[in-house]
Image (cartoon, one colour):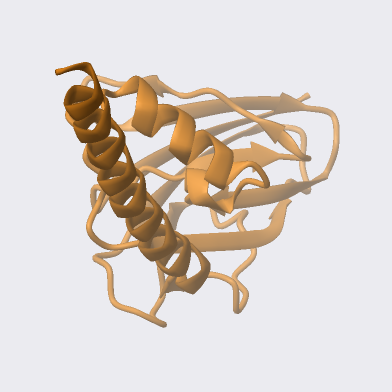
Amino acid sequence: MRKVTLEVAGYKFEPEIRVDGKLIRAKKNKEKRMVYVIETEKSELELDIYKWYEEESKLWLLMTIVFYLISLFGILDIKKEKFCRSLKYKGKMLLPEDKEYNTKIVMADYVANELAFGVAGDQIIEDNDSNKYFEDELVISRRKEAKTIKKFLTIGIILVVTALVIIIV
């Protein structure tokens, strides 16, 4: 049985981690770092470390409009990050022996097209070209599109309310 203790430290970029396609949950340790514990029989695991934005889903526009209306036309809406800094790492975790592995992923400060994280402790995580930060252009363009749609919705609602007030009075 192989046991991996994976700790994420460094830059305040909280990525999601999937192992063999399954999202794993983290616990916080006393230093308030995210710690993942993985137990497996396999000697090689697929590892995905990524930052996901809701604008990447298929129903992003519908959900944006629904939450805009629910949040009283954006008044109670949650503010989103100004920048769409992403990481989409896909690699392997190599576990050659049956033992406990202690690995720390140290997130680097954001610099576009530079390494996103380094590995300390047991060097079980493969390094490849997907270990880079980038600005997610899809999310940026969809946020601009959503902002425009919200403006038109607001103007339309104001016009409808004004027309109803004029008709009633």
